[in-house]
Length: 284
Image 1 (cartoon, rainbow, N blue to C red):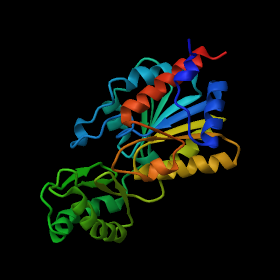
Image 2: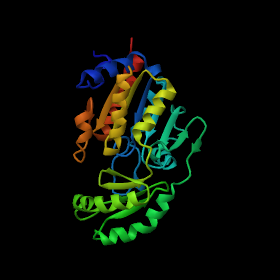
Image 3: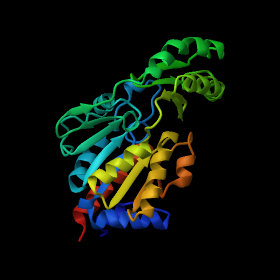
């Protein structure tokens, strides 16, 4: 009969195998951080209808108490991610941290406290000018705008030609963002105009340092997760083993190319978390 460790997928790189071994050997000094959309929750046409995979809360709740900490790092507002994930009051997640707006916002399950900076003035200016910019760019049918409060996102997934609309809008939206001191974050059929200076890499590095973790796992699925992947690579040079997990999809290949382990979307992420929880329980 196999051990619980046998059910954990094997990373394909030496760095990934080292990090997995470190996490399993000393989970109390390891942290796990995960993106939300596409990683813990399936991608849907309407982000308002996104919900965590059915197995996410049980898997997170089983693993989190055995780790130094666990975090969700997302471009969504923190409160929206908490609601969509069902995290508030979930069993086993009293030490969960949600870092929203790429780390600009923070929600801590232990206190229920949400901290957020004041909105960047450029966001209001972009919000006012965006309809005209979209019309001038061709007003692609099916394209729609999501107001995130601290950012504005233009989605092309519902357009007749999602990729064509995405490419057509990149340059005009980059020009609009630059004019108002913002940056454009491209994602899976979405272009987000947001303030500079924060990204998932900055947020993840700060979280790892704050926690005092000696090993880190990060899982993501989109281009916005590349800075977090880079942060893990930098932490490795400081002696902190890191496991990079890609929640695989056919839309983004850049993460898979850099990952130590590729799993099959949110269902694969949930299975990995559950396997890790079982392996930690059964170690020794």
